[in-house]
Length: 84
Image 1: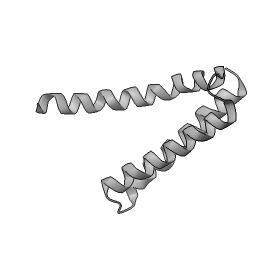
Image 2 (image 1 turned 90 degrees about the horizontal axis):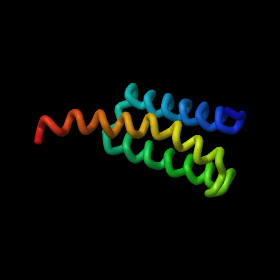
Image 3 (image 1 turned 90 degrees about the vertical axis):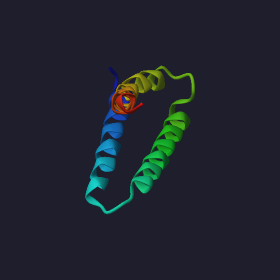
């Protein structure tokens, strides 16, 4: 692991923590989802502009980010499948 990769993962973790703190606010679920979407788009664009599309650091960072993303999708599937 190199420093840019660690920095990307740390920034991602800080953003996740900040999004997690919205549970204490009286925001609707729609607002929370839209704020998360906006933060994700801005973070993704920043990484794309900093590293470029073919950077190995970006590819490695995405593999680490996918751990959280895939876990979230699998948890949603576990909730939805019994309901169907």
